[in-house]
Image 1 (cartoon, rainbow, N blue to C red):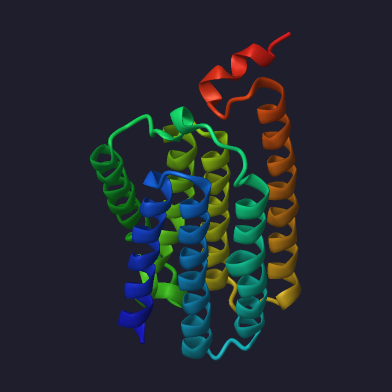
Image 2 (cartoon, rainbow, N blue to C red):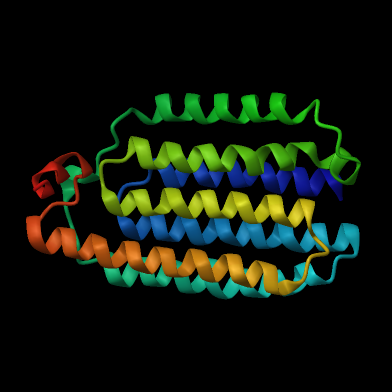
Length: 214
């Protein structure tokens, strides 16, 4: 069971990397949905390992919001906003892959000396949840497209959800619902702002947003 959980956590990192380097909102939304499904599988396996029934409820909420609702909103609301020049990453995918690997290794080194009996055999998963926060920041920094930067925030939120599932898997379902609703409304607000930016200056390139000054 531990090996399965750790392998799923590794797959989570791979899907995060693909989200960061993907071009186009449709591809990013699809990859984010796949990653969220991996997160749901992690919820279920952790629930089985620790007999934490509340995580099964978390899984249902995650399927509805992270796997279906959020990717659908991001795809259908943003599919008409096209700016090919902004779709290019600031850095080459190999450079981004190297940074993701460094972040993962650094997170493992940070987590290793931490004494947490509750997750002593799942430290790689804890390291992945920590790395996800920084991979989300990497997505925001390396992408010029403000729509792709939205997915950076989503990656950070998935990392926070995974850490919460590990550290507080017996917490009431209401806790996960609260975090998910907060993330949901944050994404909605960011989608609205993105549409307004594109409507007014006809670009999604974050480097050109200095025209909004004044």
